[in-house]
Figure 1 (spheres, rainbow, N blue to C red):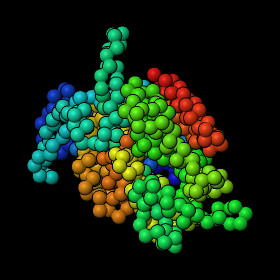
Figure 2: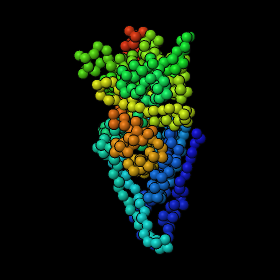
Figure 3: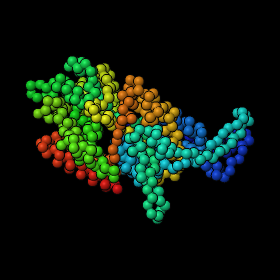
Figure 4: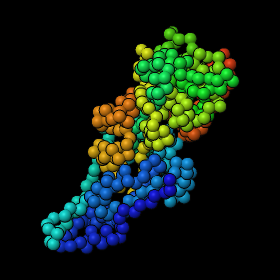
Length: 476
């Protein structure tokens, strides 16, 4: 999609209107005059066009006519490269989106949210023919750490609250917890189902546990005499042709009791957690990976997927696979490609008798450290992420909520209800300063594991954990 670059207001014109308006104007003090000088916020986005934010931007601009807002959407494939280059050359945006797994990577480029922001307001009085204006400079409180933890899912708090050095230059480091970003939506991994394939196989109910899920696979697989898979039960077992394979493996590990990282952020998913040492002989991370790989192992009863299959999303929209694991953001693509598909959206299967664990995947808004208008930028993000404004955005963008208080409003939504229902039990995990390298290391673990004798799988997991650790430590 081509870039959109929208200028909502012309600052110089507004400045003349503000201070040379009709009627008698009550003169503001020097601080307020300075705060009313024209400012421009440049916003870079990657997942939504400007139209879903227009009502919010217009309302904010009405309250703050001195602020011009430029909104630009870039293509996903060009976004990071353009963003990094622009920030390095001091021509980057004031406000920009980062994926929740990128927060560590961009932390050095982010200006943490201040406790308060200072904004000027203009208020009109009188009739249109005899109008006067008053001006007020307000110190507005940002969302606090306590409020954030109360208002958002635990996954969000763990992602956007970070230790930041708040000491003055030259002074000893002073690390404090600060909010560095805020979301407008939280997506979760769910299971898309081709109901026609289940009906044809005589499967009356969609499985809600992994044991039940496994039991349905042999009934859904169709293989010809040459060994070619004509119809798959699910797309699991590999990395290259499975959408978000690393997310699926990660949530399987967490559901099975693996501790993905230590308190200091080092990966531990290959180790046996202390609370399980007397209960299990195989670490939960290793066991989860083995479970995942079985679906691409011809020697297993659940064999249903191999490297000759197309991308899992393509296979699902072609009617060649019964279960596809994806996010709410996959739904428009599925409906566009397969409008007649007899589709159901189900919760992610769980391990029976284990705590429910789901997986969070979302984007957050943050402010560049190089912005000349950090107060205004954070003031706008605080405004944009208020519940009423988030709800307005969600209804236009068709996304699940971020605020916990909004979840109930979407539970009955045919398209978003499942994703919303999983938000409170969703988790994320710290992926270091180079999430792309972490992703590559996890994908390699899956690929190598699929080509390794099961007896050597533990070695593969340990090597992957070490590689992931190296990517995490690189930015510390």
